[in-house]
Length: 160
Image 1 (cartoon, rainbow, N blue to C red):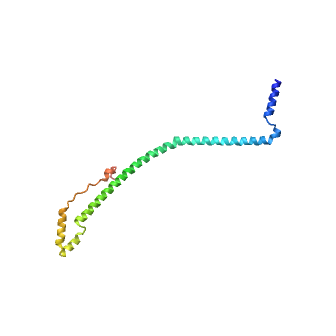
Image 2: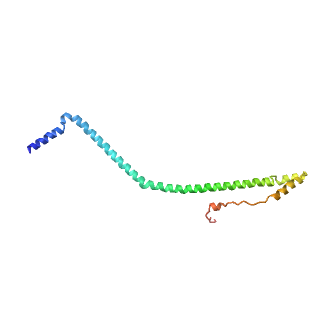
Image 3: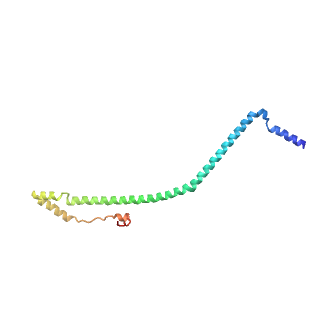
């Protein structure tokens, strides 16, 4: 047993540096280790914070984002329907403008007071021919119009 104790003491003297000789270096090394351990603790704390934030994002924010995306798809469908409605109204307005232009060319744009003045100036034959021939040529067909209620059903309002 004495040999074992002596061997252990020799090995410990060999492995452990002499504190008196290397004390400044050992203290510097221990301070570096302490600083490194402090930084490792900070890093682990930061990882825990990131982990909790990411779980919050997964558990809370992701469902909210999904709900908002579903709402946006519904809004996009409404916008598409509204664009189609605006296009249809534009086509109806263009058709009405064409009909008004055609009616103006068929019936003339002179107001009746100007026609009366021209009749008194002895040009009635010219005006009567053109109007009678125009009246025979044209036959009015009312255009098919859309109803706004078909596209925007309104809630029955309660009278006041």
